[in-house]
Picture: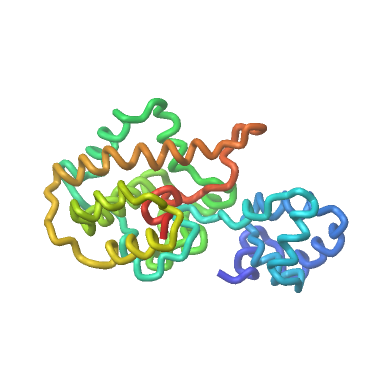
Length: 249
């Protein structure tokens, strides 16, 4: 989404945003706070200010403000999935793999049910103001606008996890679990290849539900470990898949 369309959500024009940046140039905290609250990324600020992204980052770094926080604005994933976007879908399964059944299994592994529900809440106040999550807010191009509800995000969460684990065979899962450096390019390359190719086995509903029961709580718990010690709020990781396998791509 263009910066013009993004600003229009708040009734702000590009010229008004440029004027605000110019008038607050000596007060980077003001620009940072407004940008953070309204999902204005460093790329957008670069376009508005006319300076490169590197200079925008340096501007905030000099003021001891973490510009990385501005770039985590998407509800689902804050990285470019390219060919893997097709894995992000709603869940249409029934029985053991229905949203209700999977939720019951996952909640049995979550210490605080409130953490579970809050995981599916919007991170920015503006994201659900109009009652829908659009492509820009979701971060995935193959999804059209969906109702801005926790049930919508739960359906996408479980549907996508089903798709992910349906692509991986046991040997690939073992390699993933035992890979020594999950920050390496080798790991990313292996994971990308594994998720882009069909699995050599067909997992049954029981097997898939068990895999999701074990993985979903880890994703949710890792999300909440990103708390800012001063405010108690999640610092900037906003996508519900940022700590999943897709977050390693």
